Every structure is written in C-alpha cells, then in structure tokens.
Image 1 (cartoon, rainbow, N blue to C red):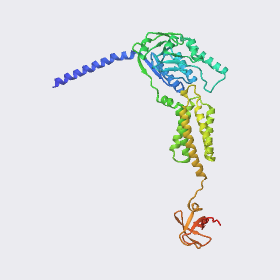
Image 2 (cartoon, helix red, strand yellow):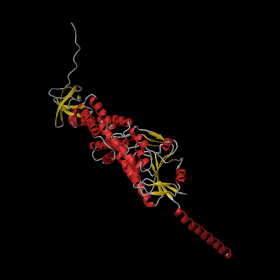
Image 3 (cartoon, helix red, strand yellow):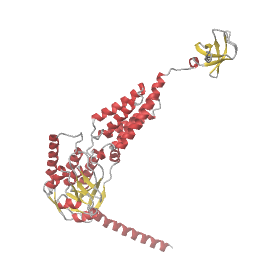
Amino acid sequence: MLQRSCWFAVRLGLASAALFALFALAAPALAQQPVVDKFILDDTIQPVSASELHRAIAEANSSGARALLIQMDTPGGLETSMRAMISDILGSRVPVVVFVSPSGARAGSAGFFILESADVAAMAPGTEAGAAHVVFEMGKADSIEMEKVENDAEAFLRSYVTRRGRDAAAADAAVKSSASYTAEEALKNHLVDLIANNDQQLLSVLNGRQITRFDGSKMTLNLAGARIEVLRTSLRDELLGWLVNPNIALLFLVGGALLIYLEFNAPGTIVPGALGTLMVLLGIFGLNLLPIRFTAVLLLLAGMAFFILEAKFGGHGALAIAGILCLTFGALTLVAAPIPQLGVNPLVAVALSLGFGGITVFLLRLVVRARRRKALIGADAMVGCRATAMEPLAPEGHILVEGEIWRAVSPQPVPAGASLRVVGFEQMLLHVEPALPPLPPETHH
C-alpha cells in the first residue's frame, strides 16, 4: 500500500513538472505574439467620442501594441471634436488603421475626414464614405462666410491627404459637392488603401506592408499572428456617451424641473427636490457638451412664462398654446446640430412640450386657486349656508347646519323646523335670519 502511494506521488510530481515546463515554454511565445489594439467608434463625432479615442491612442502607445485598429461607423458630427481626433491620430507613435466596417457602415461627413487621416484607410464591402460638405452649426451663413469655411475645410483635408499619398482632388469633391463613395469607388479613386471583409483578413493583408508615417518615415508592419484586443470604454465614458444624447439631456432637464416644482409645493418631501436638482444638473451638463443656440433657450423661457400667465390670468387656452409652441420650437432648435443625429428628435420635442405644458398649467392653476381661496374653518365655513331650526328661536336656540348642531340667534322669533340662512357669527354663536321664501308664481288677470 505504501509503495502504491509513493508511485502515485511520483507520477503526480512528474505531471506537475511537465505542465510547468509547458507553461514556461508558452509564456515567451505569448509575450512575443504581436498585439493590435482595437477601438470601436460607432457613435457621432462629439466631445465624448473624441475623449474615448484620445484614451485609446494613449493606451495603444503605452502598451506596446503594433497598431491601433479603429472600426468606424459614424454619420459625422462636430468639427471641433473631429479636428481633435485627427490631431491625435496624426500624432500617434503607433500606426493607426481606420476600417469602415462591418458591411452597411459609413464614414459620413466628419467620419470621412477621420478616415483619410489614418496611416492605413480600409473599407469593407458594402460600406460608404464621403458627403463631407460643411454644415453650419449656427444656421445658414452668407456666401462669403460659407466660402471661407469650405476653403478652410478643404485645405485642412489636403494638408494630410497629400502626405498620406491619397487623391486630394477626389477628397475635395466630398467637401465641395458632398460626393460619396462606395468601397470600390474609394479604392479606385485612391482614397483608401484596401478593401477587406473582416479584421483578420485586413491584418493578414497588412502584414509585411510598408507604410509612410505622417512625418515621412518608412515603417513595415509586422502583424503575423497578431492578437486583437478590444479596448473597453470606461464607465465614465459610457455614462457621458449616454448623457450627451440631446433627447436624454432634455428629458432630464424638463423632468428635473417638474420634480423641483413639486418640492416647492410640498416642502419637506426632500426626495423630489434632491432628485430633480440632480437631473437638472445632469441635463445642463449634457447639453453643455453640445453647441446650444441661445435664441432657443429664450424660447424655452418664454414658453414657461406663457404657462405661468395662463395659470394666473386664464387665457382660455391661448397662452398655453403659445407656451407649447415656444417650447416645441425651442426644443427643436436647441442644439445647433450639423447632422440630424445630434439634434432633438421632433417626436420627442412635441411630446415633451405637450406633456410638460399640460402638467405645468394644471399644477399652477391648483396653486393659484389654493392661494386665492380663503381659509374656511369652523364658524367661517358656515356663513351663507342654509340651516334648519331644531327648536324655536326666541331669540336663541339650536340649529342644524351642514350636519352640525350650532347655537344661533335670530333677530325675530323663529318656529322649530323653519328654514334659515347663516349671515354671520360672534365667537361660537351664529347669527341667522329666515331664509327668503320662494316667490309665488305670477298670475295673469
């Protein structure tokens, strides 16, 4: 028995040693395997997406990745954020590969600028890129100002397209005439370097390929057997990406305002006030990340003023309708969005205006009526009410009024069961008088 146990221990030791040797041999191989970091950009181009890309490039530069692969599907976005993202790409020590993928994706407007800034620009079959015409965030500009902005955008695009060895004329057409290209057309016009079906095929084609960096230096990509590591967005960026949605930000702002209003009308509840304040601050923070029209803010304030006037003076609904219209137009034009995806959805704007307007007018009217109404407690509430004499009043006696028994005094004798009307009170003694009998019907002679 002892011999069998020793033999089992020997076998276990040999197996452990073999596993340790296997791991020891595999560790250098894993350490030497090239890594390509992957960042997925499937949102609009705005401050949050620019911050996410900045963090991804910084992580790829510090982790020793062979390249940073940006999988892109975007309709475009804000110029300021686009320029910041392009600046990060051009300044990256690690080669940046922008891949418009999967099929059905697009690199529209600002996304086209980002695609052309990459060390390697690639597209999947069934994708498109272009339509990069300048759209003013603050409304329509005159012809001279528009020409200046277009020329500036074209010069900015040419400043790195030519250094990347791509066709500047075809790129300019995307800005001048909003030209848009399929993957095959973009490859034919030398706007992208290759077409690939997926990430693995893309890396396989790029392995051993020599590229020219933005500073003019040559570099050969060694991506054989590269492992792709997807960079996860932080919780902060996920929350900000959700909050930068103008529809969400506007809902937070309006909903928070209603909760704060409820707190003012029911002091001490605490929860509505605290939650409402948090929602308003988050809404303001989200909208602050987007270009806001101040005229739209004035329309929102005017809408609130109309609701207050309607509740206070009663405009037979005219002031409420004016307030709803102001609120709707203010919400629709609140964000100076160069693309529809960055603006407030029309259905959200209309629904929010109707709901908020109706609730606000209803609550304000309740408050105004409550403040105008006198506090009727005890004997005050009896003045003007009908009463019945429970016993003869000569001049005092008991009466029944509003289901309560009170002591009352009458200026003239009143028989039991007579109908009375309360005309006043003194301390706890009601003053009554006989109710006027109904007029007899008219007779004709």
